[in-house]
Image (cartoon, rainbow, N blue to C red; front, top):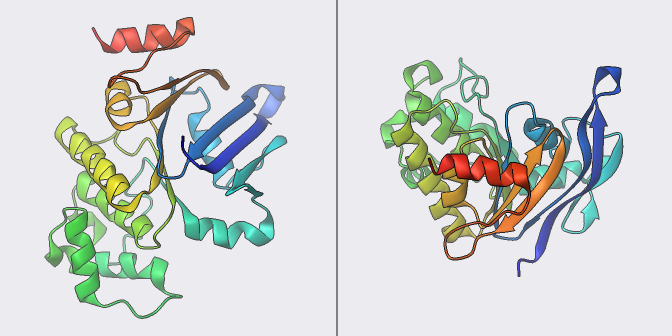
Length: 244
């Protein structure tokens, strides 16, 4: 049993015309656990990620981290412990900064960071050490996403929220990123909320999966014997389609 780290309690949110995008969402992530959140495009997955990260406000419900509600005065401490990586790796990187600048920025309020330390960390995410002086425009899509991942890791978070981070990468790079997340989880006991419509990646990576449809969690399953069993008809249909 995982000790509770993140708890999403009864979150509701609507956009214009009162159409609910999140409908009484309950979700948890345990310490060191890898949790998947799947569903078709438009099901509300990314909106939920933004609510968790306090980038959008819910109309109802609350998000708790380590059993405490995330309030304004607790937000800075929350961001030290929880980081998000977005789908668009390019948009997350200042095009005028070198990789060295990008990696040093999250640590600017901490002790001075040496290039030797950054090079050691680059190796952990399988990036060449001479990349420090490169600009984002000189990097491939996979390299950009690894830089984003490393930026998050440098603050030593307890939880990383990955919002469709492999969807724009080719299959080989996707697998490398997923394997890297698996390794980091084992080495650091770092929890991961992995949001994706790639069911094979989610099934391979995650300990537990939530299935979302039209803003509602319709099913949840724990991994047993390297597989998942669902009871909801929509969830069954999604995962049966994956096998064909």
